[in-house]
Amino acid sequence: MSRVDTAWLRMERPTNLMMITGVMMFETPLDIRTLRKVVEEKFLAYPRFRQKAVETPTGAFWVDDPDFDLDHHLRLTALPGRGGKKELERFTSQMASTPLDKTKPLWQFHLVEKYDGGSALIARIHHCYADGIALVQVLLSLTEVAEGPKKAALARRWLKKEEHAPVAQRVGAIDRYVQLGNRMLEKGMEFYRDPSLAAVLANEGVDIAREIGLALSLSDDPETVLKGKLGVSKRVAWAEPLPLDEVKSLSRALGCTVNDVLLASASGALRSYMLERGETLDGVTVRATVPVNLRPLEHARQLGNHFGLVFLDLPVGEDNPMRRLERIAASMRVLRKSRQAVATFGALAAVGMAPPPVQSFALELFSRKASTVATNVPGPQMPLYFGGSRIRDLMFWVPQTGSIGLGISIISYNGQVHFGLIADARLMPDPDSVIRRFRPEFEKLLYLALMARWEGTFGAEDAEALMLEVSS
Image 1 (cartoon, rainbow, N blue to C red):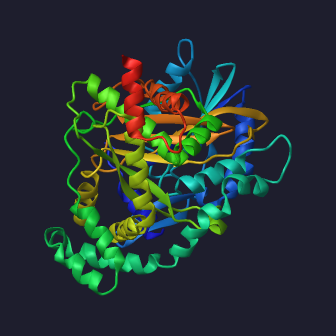
Image 2 (image 1 turned 135 degrees about the vertical axis):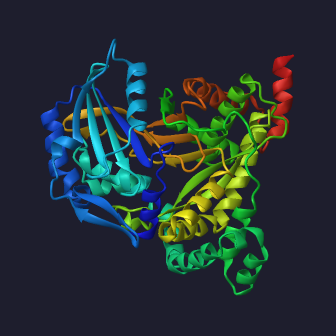
């Protein structure tokens, strides 16, 4: 097992299980026999999913499970009561809170019968198997397209080469960064207390030292209702989808990216929730750890984890929606030019082979610097079919690490953008209270853009004037 995959395996805690949970909702019923056939023919075509993870003092290894039994990994269930969205969210929450059996391959599919005129399928896969980009490829390999184009052609439409080429050019340096990450972790607290070590390594021409030094020097995230002692239960929720065309049009009109618009909407939803909970937010900023793909396009179908993390400021203390968007867009521009993602990849690789005390220290050190994990995965922009059943909607939830108790997930599919939240139940027992604010926050930005008198660019000052005019 690679060092980074080992790190994700060892990060698991009772309060934060390291598995990715996803749900597909089908327009027509899917039966268990069809599910079994698809899994046997397509999912198990990846030999890794017949293997289990074995830990030793010197590392972790993949070994074939001699007692592999598909029945353990395929479960049939039914929802209680009306069997609607609330019941599906509750059952998915239970699955997101339930550890996978470490004596077997770390994945399961749960088929929910009779959901909203069709069926639903909940997938649970441990993060040590793959990252989000790889798992979307796995999902693609299980589906069909009605029109019948080759899957490779479909993949090219939403994994655009130009978006990944710069990443591929940087990947060659990762081995060097891993070695430097090992040297830094060997220093433990000495590095944390002595930032001059970063300067020494930087003088040797190593930019990675500066990036890790900057990350370690970040202050801890403020104590808010988004941080606190974690329990062992999770709650998941998802919002009604947004039209992707509207999001793209808004991003073009405002001169930012789709991701900027969506994260600004999420920040606004968190701000509204925190104010309702009695927080004083003037000037407050919380951070999100955001995964950044480091996987070259030609390796997109390979399993494993090939991503780094960056720390993004979410300006929840800013009451102007347009200014929130501008600040997030500016932060993302800086992060895209930095090597922070590659730096954290190297650090994760080093953590994967470090002694348990060093692992715990590093995990807690980094997790104190953020309040949430936020990820956006592009999906195929055409309807997909699973075993002949059309996928109507889909959603997934990312695991959180250390003391982080909140995860924001965004995925686009078939012309729509889906927004989901997973939260520690002790920290946020009702994530729907945030979810329901996502669309209104997006519509604020849309409204401000539509109402503006276009004379070049439209910024935060214009938004403030417009908001004052409307309120009066």
